[in-house]
Length: 72
Image (tube, one colour):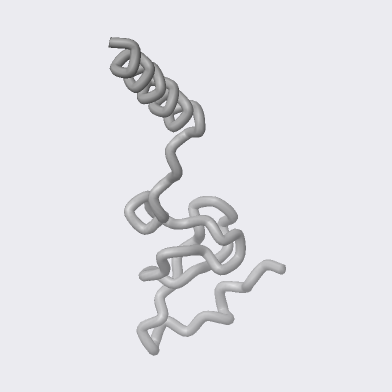
């Protein structure tokens, strides 16, 4: 559903801009698009999880150090 430009009233301070992802109109100060639910900027987005291979690599390194210490 596309919103028409005349549905928004800029007189009450609710200025809108198009979402950079879906082009639907959103409020200027929105952190997230209510239509496509993408965050507008990286600063607003939650921190990304670390890739599983990094966690697995750290665990393997820790295991190697523990085994090395136990054998000496």
